[in-house]
Structure formats: C-alpha cells, structure tokens
Length: 319
Image 1 (spheres, rainbow, N blue to C red):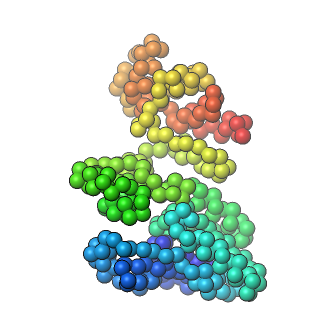
Image 2: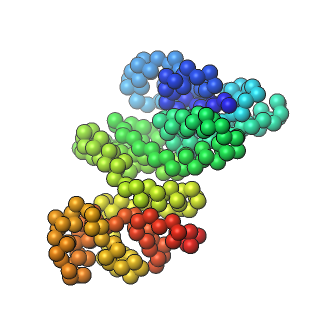
Image 3: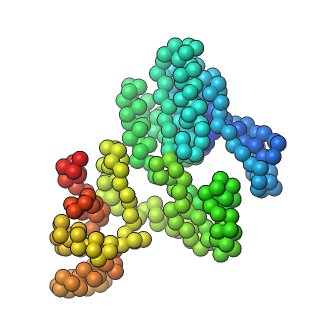
C-alpha cells in the first residue's frame, strides 16, 4: 500500500523515512518569490520572510499532474489531503485519479478529505499504517479510515490575527482591537471549516483554555458524538459550562426524563452545594441552572424527547 499526502500534513521522522509514503507539495508565494513546500524547505528562512512580508502572500494546491505522478506503481493508493474547505488539494487529487485511470487504467485509489490540516492529516496517515498492519482489505480500510476521520477533533491557537484578516474571515479593525487587548484566538475544525471556538486573554490562558476544551468532554459525551458522527446524523454540541440550559429548556428535559435523573450525584459540587441535604425540587432546579457541573452528561435532545448519559438504544429508535 502506498500513502500519498500533501504538504499540509506534518511529516514525522518515521514518515519521512518510509518509502511507501509520498509527499505532494503545495506552492507558497511571497510577493514574486515562489517556494515549493517540500520536506527540505528551509523553514526558518521562510518564516522570516513571512514576518517581513505580511501582505501579498499566497498558497496554491498541488497540480493534478503531481498527484498523477505520485499514484504510479502496482500498490493500492490512499491519498490524504487538506480539508476541501481550506484548499483545492482534495479536488486536485480527485481530478488526478480520473486522469490516472484514463492514461494507465483502473487501480485502487481512495482520496481522503481529512477535513483537517497539519497533525490531523498526520493522525490519518498513522491510522492508515496501523490498518495496513492489521491486514485489512482495501475496502475495509476505506470504511475504517472514514470513521476515524469523522471522530477527529482538531484545535489550534493562532499567534496573531494576520491569517484571519488576510483570508477575509475577520474584520481588520476587530483584529487590531483584539490584538491591543491581548486577546488570543482559539480555533478548531467544524466539518472541515476553520472556526473560532473560544478566546482568551494572553497566550498562557489560551493554552489553559485549549487544554480545558480538549479534556472537558466526559467519556459518555465522546461516545454520543461518535454515535451520531458514524451515522452522519447532524447535531449541535453545546458546552453546558459555556451556555447552560435555560429555565424553559430544563423544564422540557425534566418532563422527558425526570429531575433526579438529571442530577449527577458523583459531581464534586453535589455535596459542596448541599444537594444531598436539599429536598425541595424548586431549590434543586435553581441550583442546577446556576451550576451546570451538577448535570449528568451528555444531555441529548430530540424535539420533546431527551436522554442523559450514553443511551445508544434510545437514539437508534429516533432514526
């Protein structure tokens, strides 16, 4: 099996030394100077030029011909590209597949839209190697790698707002104000789109916030997300610490599953807030609204129906 990845992927030392992994480079341009984003690109020199020239910077996806050349050989080929919402690399790889079939005949080629970038692509490449070692067939690997991709969550911190402004994702005046206030953007991937997920005052707090966001989801929440992602069922994730249930929402969920089923008696705040001694339903509801750490999670809502915790059998009945 051969793996082809564009240069949006962070190539590890092991990947660089693996003859079955081929890199297809993007093109980088600063003013009139063009760079090929190959493994031997002088990164230090390139970053210095980026700092010196904050405008007139462009990137271009690999040409279809570069992918066609990489597809050669008798092996099955898996291709990992930058998110199709961030780059034309995926479309170029798919076009190359058709060109290859026309010129050389059919063979097993599968193009994976990573819906991510950087280390997200790296994780997909490593997973492909793992699946190969297990001896899975081409079709089995296709199925497993798509499941793996759909369960990935990508987060990153930007040092500044330059890229958001240059790509038109952020008003330059808003960016300037945020920079003056020392607000650091925390971003993530949403179905392949780069989105702003949070903000923090200063880089240290941004890192702490990022770590908190990554680790905040309980195992049952992760299982719930995996359930809906694998079935390609659209859903909206809301962090209760950021936006708790409204009074009306609580009443709706309570009607579906009961108040006591919503309360996490193992929460560290349960005894701290004397919930073990408070019996009045109205007071318990008020404490829930003010202290979302008391909820059993995830709370999954489907119209008037709702569940708490990991409830795949109930969710199946909703399909």
